[in-house]
Image 1 (cartoon, helix red, strand yellow):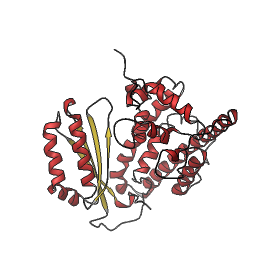
Image 2 (cartoon, helix red, strand yellow):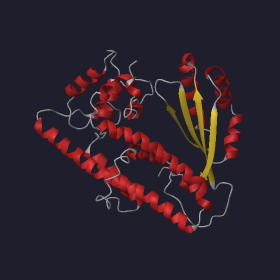
Image 3 (spheres, helix red, strand yellow):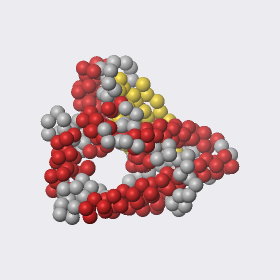
Image 4 (cartoon, rainbow, N blue to C red):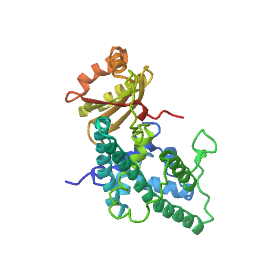
Length: 335
């Protein structure tokens, strides 16, 4: 029995690519969404359309996850082992971060120093890997533009309501790198030499680490000062896992979307995000609340009651949930 492309080791990253490209959350990537996500400032409109049509093997004028994963799976080459390592290291670093949270305050000052150093060094080593990859990407972009100067790159703002939208490429990557440098407060390219050996697995974490930072959870923010315990000194992180019946996937998605939209407007809810494991009925939802009391209070709202009632029919097994409290100053609010 053939393995689905989305389940092959090293291809899970394209499920995240699909999620980010599917701006409308329709479950498909339209031509306009494809251009907005994949245009690179080099390829022309006709070239991109030819690639889009090649990926769209079902001839629906849209791309589903299976088509996207199957297309890139055929072209991965040596990058397959890199992306496979990304998947593994992502899980390992996430486990390390969550293992640190409940024990850090109980450590002595020396142990705290070591833990902070290890976190900073992880960032430094990952950033050291990022630099040569970005340099190579910039060079390949330049070569591609030079070899066909007659081709006019597709303009993303033709497909969006925001005039002047920036095409992904060197400028955007440099801006992100600058933001990363400002955030870490350290010389992020200091360890290029000697750190690459043994870090093949850590290129793994790069995309997932950025994703965690984009969701505003700051695990750099450990402090060894004594803090006064106050009611709002902790935030509550809740994980809820769902195993949905195959015949109720659409009903669950509709109910889940209504719940997320409603709960984000409830006082005390700082963030909600959802992950769906492709070709399964497994969903994980992550909520961050100002306090446990406010999270429990939300259970009395119509939106939460409706979602929980719908789950009695939609779920194949009972919901599994877990929670952990972390220092509130680890939460990065938008600036």
